Image 1 (tube, rainbow, N blue to C red):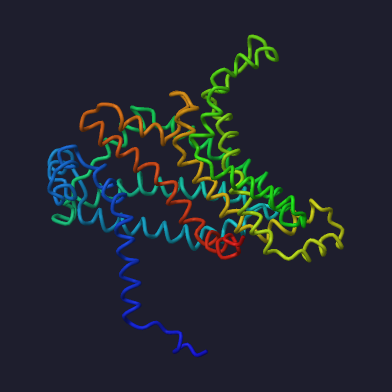
Image 2: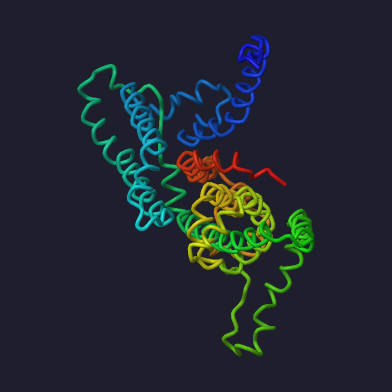
Length: 384
């Protein structure tokens, strides 16, 4: 069939592209708007005039803001960093991976790139602009009010760094355990011809479909009384499960593992069994064939599944809010507590700044791993 026959009519192109653009605007507007509010004083942030919220005249007059040259150079540097993260970083990570261990290389390379980007945006760029602005006359005059005092209050004064660390501990633990168990279980179930394996997956899917409130209601009494029923084993030193991040990791893995196994099983099913047989002929054991041949082939699927596991744990509210104490609270329930308490206008803007802060790691993950995600999703993640 010719390409002309498959070409969409102009009306359909306009309709589909218009709907997509409208959906993107509707989806992105809340995030963009609260991001703007988080850099303004409360008077500007909650002004009924949207232009005063955007330009922040009160913020510009009393604190300062961005000039035209600040905006241009800032956007140029941010665009360059994003472009390099998408096009340059993945290749370098694979090139310098020790013995093909791209996981370690991604941790080191991604962390180093994030640190360099942060230094360039937060330290180097402001220093350069501080010298340029006085020399450029009108171009160096502030036109948009901006303040970072709310972010400083959240991360430094309120100790939000502790909540961030707790979130990283929980999400990293969930991803590590989920992928370790999920890859082994998914591979075994994909290569099993037994009907029992299929029904195990169905039961796991039903378990995953249960509301989290039902599951947490079953865990909560045992978490609270864990020191009592562990006392016969550990005596007076019996630990309590309540409030412990490692215990939350076990709960979230139990809840989300069926989803991980289902996804990874679908990926493994798209890998021909002949690869296993060829590896076995070359002298690999079953596990050696899995580790040296199968996993490298389906690495995009592992990354995609790991990202979904990260999101499920990172965005969890119910489990973490009920089973973690205030000292070990993760970011999502901590922000909910900020909004729920009676606060001043400044406290509300600080809560908004905290809400904006937790979206940054998600954007970074999607930008860095976008190629692997697209490759993984098209490799059979939706196959039954």
